Image (cartoon, rainbow, N blue to C red):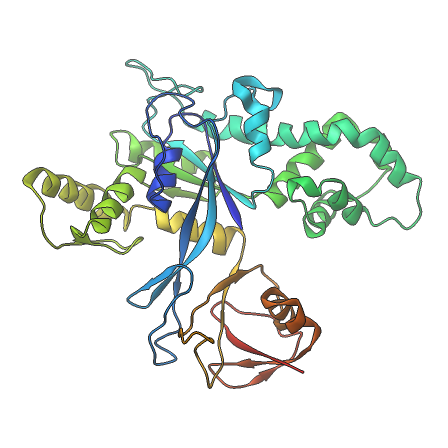
Amino acid sequence: MLIGLIGKPSVGKSTFFKAATLAEVEIASYPFTTIKPNHGVGYVKVDCIEREMNTKCMPNHGFCIKGIRFVPIDLMDVAGLVPGASEGKGLGNRFLDDLRQADAFIQIVDLSGETDAEGKLLEGKSYDICNDVRFLEDELNKWYFNILSKVWKTFSKQLDSGKDINYPRAIANQFSGLGVKEEHAKAVFRKLGIDEHLSRWTPKQILEFASLLRKESKPMIIAANKVDTEKGSENLKKLKEAFPDKMIMPCSSDSELALREAAKHGLIEYIPGENDFKIIKGLNDRQKRALETIRGDVLSVYGGTGVQEILNKAVFELLGYLAIFPASANRLMDSKGRILPDCFLLPPGSTALDFAFFLHTDFGNNFIKAIDAKSKMALGKEYVLKNRDALEIVTR
């Protein structure tokens, strides 16, 4: 799974990325600090099953703190997109191309309103942050539209000339390079209906189709960053009123980065996504004041910095993924003696058989049944997985 961080320059994308991954990236308050995309590992939080299984897990990937499992996901931070990006402005085509394989987007919006549409600092002026949401969505839709338009005439005629054509499958095959799947195309066709031949569609209809396809294949959550700035709360309210249908979450990437760095160096005890921290040792007066400001202006007001919450919402609500533990009711460890070493993320609607194939092709091909490690009940191949299921796959 790959989550792309997007937005105009200088909104805090790289800070959000570093806070989520603790990767070493360049952070600066001028446009196009990031040119090549940064890749890193972030984590989503899941209640571990170790307590239910009366044991202590030993993660093979990620980590577990006080019964909270952190499962790795891939994050990508690309350079800032500006109005006209779909036409190549600001090297837009190159940066959009970097986003092809992303499963979902997190748009970082700067609630301070201190930079213009291109990320340049405004001197004594205020910027309407709602413009950032409008222009970015427009550019993403045009990106899909431009790709569709180049092949649409030939492609649509080929489809219209055939019999019993599976339109969604044909669309998915044609645009698989964008990560478009058959179910995405099916959802769009259901919403639009097919009242006439595709070859007769107008550019307006193609744009509508492209926009819906983009929303289905690359859904987006908005990270309302810098909520702790002077105009942060005011602009957050404005943003939510302007876009009531969008998933908008407040956050302070700077605060999360400061807390994670302090925890990394053993100065505080902090679990990402929690609403407080505990000072351990070694802080000077300046550091204490800075952390108390974060506690008072961010954690106590918003219940957290928002960074971890946004990652979790992107994966579990926006994409609907499920956290699944491979586990035997009788033997909780792997061949190397690690207890509950793995937790995997599977797409919504996955079955026990899908999980078997996910683990190994041989498991899927030789599937007999699955066993619920918690209840010890036998489950068939069509059993639909639930979040935090713990399953053993039995093969012949």
